[in-house]
Length: 379
Image 1: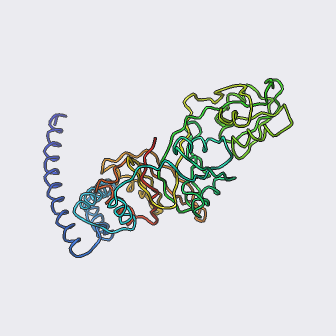
Image 2 (image 1 turned 180 degrees about the horizontal axis):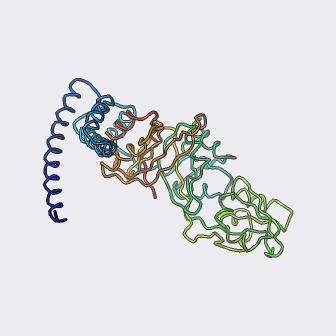
Image 3 (image 1 turned 45 degrees about the vertical axis):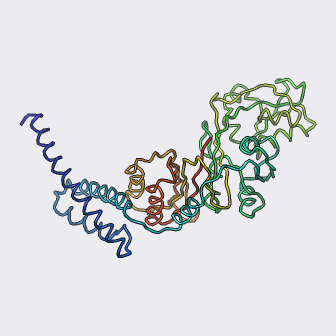
């Protein structure tokens, strides 16, 4: 047979598959309605395995795994369609429904905000830009910010979560796994690093530069050109600026912001010394209570998946089937379970769309651990 004849035969087979698929989905709808009436969940793992074993037994050995993948996809599509006619229960779904019933409010203009570091830090700059009136409390480390929000000392906390040049802030992600909180806003801050010194200091006098480790990483080219300068890490870029200002040394400099230079009366010896001109850090605003404000268009979740082959792919299919765009996928090791990971997902979605709320319910009921981190706007 010629290629065209083979293609014609494939077209005929596809037409048959299409008709059978339509028929199967119609029956799936009836099953969903029956399960809803009888109070049974959509997911039936035992039934799915029985079908996989039955259809695989009809296949030659070289097609068994392929047939399994095909039917797993059919199951995923079927369950996604069934959620349209189902009202599966979950704690997350109930919380979201409660907020939506009250109506979404605007993001607040005034708040007590927790930031890591001292005045002039990039976190505090973000706080000033997000809240028109902000009372900022500073804490030594990221965990202090989480604790301040958790204990109700501050209404919100601001934390850096990733940088466009050096990637995710792993310490924050690990603390996200430890604390209970919700993300209510996200902000992309353009980070422009300056070399700060005491007034009148020349570059030739500098023997040591202080800054946060991520700022140091973002300014790699500067240090390649000044290999004789010692690098000292500290907890925060603004803390480095304050240390230089309070020191009697004129051979000490720091990498920090223009705002920090103004606050601590330092001179910007060199500006924009970061490697990448388009250097952005993404910050999240966290709250102890679940809040969803107007214009929220992004959802973050955290899950522990079963340690079996294909579990991540199966999970990702839930988003693909519904046409939802994943904007980030990250994994971090589980502290007490060797070689197992916690996964973080960010995706674009309208929380007022029923299929999105139903998806939260489906995901919560099919994984070992599901944490809804929040629905928020990114600016």
